[in-house]
Image (cartoon, rainbow, N blue to C red; front, side):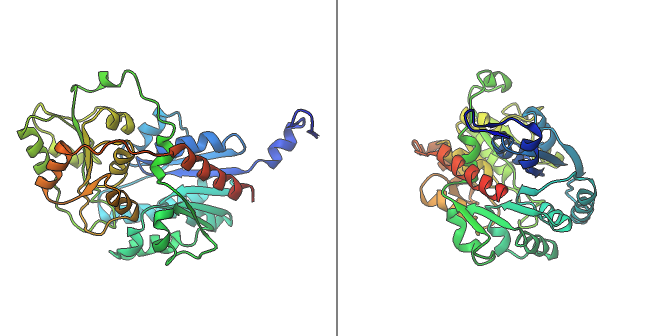
Length: 355
């Protein structure tokens, strides 16, 4: 029974029946931070079921944020193992994931596929329109095909034009901002963070994501970037993607954290960020830090192009250009209403879940 005076349900069973169960599948290291604030908001009105994939720092970062879920499957560097793992994990998810009403995921075809198998609705959040433009192999094409089968696809407004060529208009929803706004809006500095880093000042380097299907090149710029920075006496915090990236470690000026650290804390206290991928470059740009991407392709994501056009970051495969920008350029404050972006996204998600 609903109490009109106190605006609450007196019968808890009735409340539980009205709640929806949202399944969230966390598969990449950037996902725990991204989904953390979303989970906090959606859990007020819904039951949340979580699964995770063992990839890079994903599990450790999730535990640090007190995100608990069932670990199902791993990712691999070897292309054959990587391909097989996608199929086997999708099958395992379809069997092992408990009941859910709607699936919510980011850049995750496995979640969409399981939703179709279970005959449930799915919300897929995307910002990587490059995956639809670059046809590298059968698996990449299959992933894109499955993503288009999601019931709802949510993307930043700057991506609308390209995604509208691949996703039906009635499925496509947009928000004015970047996915990084969602969790940056709630960022609170760790007052003890500097005790975790052996340098008073440093640059952050994140290698290229060569294991991703949509990355064509395999020539890394990490070693020459490290050399160029250490030659001028700069310190570096290196964030490896996998074990093989530890080959870049050398000298007292380069530090690899023993445990995963909050990337936003790392950025906040850094002199700038150089990354072979996009997320950390966008985080740095939004947080008004010098930001440079050395993504191994001249075709860039629409979200990256948007920030480059705003003068918030650069992209180059020329080491001298990267070092000149990151050490000399001061981009100034980037005025953002990240809280509004987050609230808009949460409101859209609530409407879709309750529909």
